[in-house]
Length: 202
Ligand code: GTP
Ligand code: MG
Image (cartoon, rainbow, N blue to C red):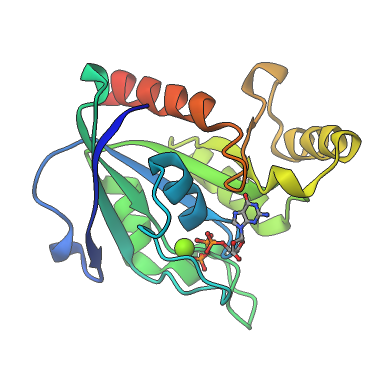
């Protein structure tokens, strides 16, 4: 994918701050530290556009990146980095942790064309499963992408993919996209999927 422009627009703390400009939006969700910001940088071929941190739970607000590509079917749109879940010391439900603004964003944002849920390739956790179930329930079934694939060998990788598919009840046809932000494995496949989501719902 030829990226002509990629810029950080803003970090939104309240619904009023969400951009008024009506462009298609693709949002990323996943456990804190799963590699959302790294994946956004990898997709866009930028090193430090989205902030990477060693401390989970750093991204607390809705972060907007405005993208322009050379693909006429995907000219201008927003990539949206949502706060990670699973960082609270006290175990709370994902929805309680996310708070009303994120829930409202996911359920009501008209220009939201697709959600991408990231799951660590090394193993899925209960909160990943419950988040997936909730998104499905509200009619926002996410595309599943497994991250940090470079950390696994061939055999481990196959076993973990099967485990994740089983835990989420995905069919063979809906098998997760395998991604590594370290090697950029999966980048073209994910771009194709994003293009399809925007074509379908944009
Ligand atoms: P929050 O913003 O806290 O929710 O985290 P995040 O999901 O944005 O994760 P982030 O991209 O900040 O990455 C967390 C850690 O995982 C960092 O130390 C990254 O360098 C590392 N990491 C992310 N993706 C990969 C990957 O594909 N391979 C490897 N080896 N490490 C990765
Ligand atoms: Mg982040």
